[in-house]
Amino acid sequence: FMNRPAISDSAMTLLRVTARESGYLVFRITLNDGNVRVFRGQPSLPGEDVQKGAIGTGTFSVTVKGFVIEGAA
Image 1 (cartoon, helix red, strand yellow):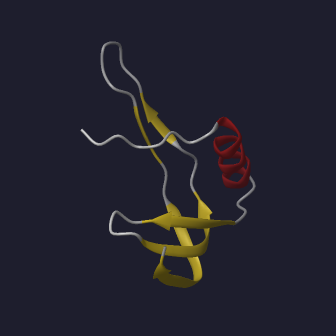
Image 2: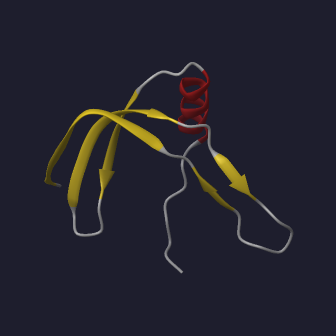
């Protein structure tokens, strides 16, 4: 089990609003090896799987628009 940081309520609200409006956001992802990816993309509405007695999970996808900038953290 990996301990992952939670996404704040304000970030999830922005993600949902942007997805509903078919808008774009800038994403910054830091990989386990410390490398960074920055890109502009159109998010989907997030999905959730929450069941009694189980760990809740969620997902969303991003359609990347334009260039992906790669570099070290």
